[in-house]
Length: 293
Figure (cartoon, rainbow, N blue to C red):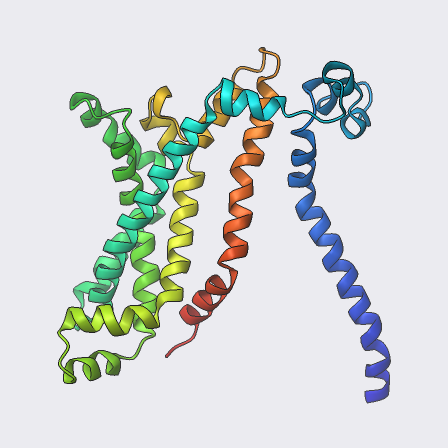
C-alpha cells in the first residue's frame, strides 16, 4: 500500500503544482492586464473592434509613435495632480495607523490584564460598533461637522477613521496580549519595573509581530476606504480612491478613463510591496494570535 501511495504522490504533486500555477495566473490576471493597459491609449485598451489592439497597441503607435505610452500616468499625476491625493492618503494612513495602534496597544493591554468583568462587556460594545456599516456612523457626524465648519478637512476624516477602526484594533491586540503569560509582567515588576515599564520593555517586544499585523490591517482600512473619505473630504483634499472615482465620473472626456487605469496601478502597486516586505511578520503575527501561550 505504501508503494501505491508513493506512486501516486508524484502525480498528486504535479496536479497540485499545476492547480497552484493556474490559480496564481487567474488571481494575478486582472492586475497584470490593468498594468499592461495603463501604457496604452483608450482606443486600444477599450477597443470594441479588435481586442488584440490592447495587446499590440495599434492605435497607441499611431497616436504616440510607440506601442507603449506614459500619457495615462502623466495625465493623472501631473495634469490632474494625483500626487496631491497620494500625499493626502499618506497623511491619513500614517495618522490612522499611529493613533489606532497607540490607543489599541494601551487599551488592549489593560483589558487583557483586567480581572473585572466589565472588560468583556467593553469588548462586546466595541464589537457592536465594528459590526455597524461605516456609512451609518458617518451620517451621524455630518451635521456637527457642517455646523462647526469641520467638513472637508483631513483631521476630521482621520478622527472618524480612527473611531471606526479602533474596535477592530482593540479586539486584535487584546487577543494577542492574552496569549502572553502574565508571568512576564510579574517577573519584570519583581525586577523593579513599573507596570508601564514592563509593558514597554518586556511585553511589546514579545508581541511585536501582532502589532505589525494589526497595523497592516489598520493601514488597509484607511488606504482603501471610499465611503468615509468620499463623504467627508472636499475635492481639494481627496485621497486616492475617491480621486480615481472622480476620473471614472468624467468618462465623456477623452483620456480620463486611462487616468483612472494608471491611478489604479499606482494605488495597487504599493500594496504588493508592503505585503512582500512584511510577509514574515504577518504570518508570525497571525500564528501568535491563534496559539495560546
